[in-house]
Length: 257
Ligand SMILES: Nc1ncnc2c1ncn2[C@@H]1O[C@H](COP(=O)(O)OP(=O)(O)OP(=O)(O)O)[C@@H](O)[C@H]1O
Ligand SMILES: [Mg+2]
Image 1: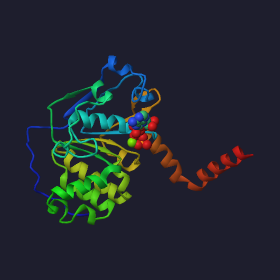
Image 2: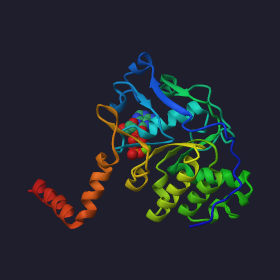
Image 3: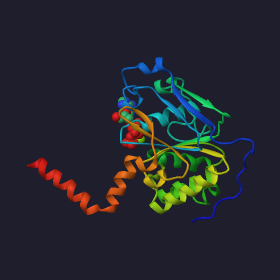
Image 4: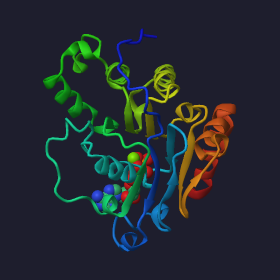
C-alpha cells in the first residue's frame, strides 16, 4: 500500500459529522415529474446523519445519484464532480430536488468534494490543467491507470470537509477498495471528514460504525450491513457460485419452454 502524505492541515475545533440531517419540504415534493416520481422519494426524505460515514445503497435506478447530485448542488460543489473552486459555471437555477431539500449543519462546512465515477476522466483532465502534479504522487492523473489515479486523488486531495462520492469503487480492485477504506478511516477517526457515499460494493459497505440507508420502493430505510440486498446476494453467490448459476440458468430454460 502506498505511504500516506502527512502534511494535512486541520482545524481541531471542528468535528464530523457536519451535515446532520436532510429533510424534504412536503409542499415542494408534490411534483408529478422526475425526480419526485422516484419511488424512494414518494413519502418525502428524512435522513439523520449521526455518523461521519453514510452509505446510500439500493437497486440501479433507485435514486441514489439523483439525491447525491442535489446535495452536491446545495453544497455548491460542481455537479460534474469537484469542489467549489472547480465549479466555474455557477448555475442560476437550482434543480427541483435541490430546492425541495433542507440541510442542517453543525457546523456548516464549505470544504469538500463531489465525485462521480463516470465523469472522473473529464475531472482528471481539468485537475491536470490546474494542478501541480506533486499533489497526485508526482504524476499526471492521466498517466496513471484508472484505479491508480482514483486512489491518488483520494490519498492526496481528501482533507477536512464533506465528501460526496458516487460509486467510488467503480475503478478499484478489491485490494484497492480496502486501501480506500483505510483512507476513510484515517480521516474519519479524528472526525476531520464526513463521507456520503453511494455504492454497490459489499466491501465498502462493511465500514464499521457507518450509517446505511437503503433506497426502496416505499422510501429510504436505515438498514444493517448484513441485511442489505448487496451483502445477501454477494454472500449467497460466493458461498456457491455454481448453485446460484445453475438456478439462474434453469429459470431461464423454464421461461423459454
Ligand atoms: N434527468 C432525468 N430525467 C428523467 N428521469 C431521470 C433523469 N435522471 C435519472 N432519471 C431516472 O431516475 C431514476 C433514478 O436514477 P439515479 O441515477 O438516481 O439512480 P441510481 O440509484 O443512482 O442508480 P445506479 O445504481 O444505476 O447508479 C432512474 O429511473 C432514472 O432513469
Ligand atoms: Mg447512480
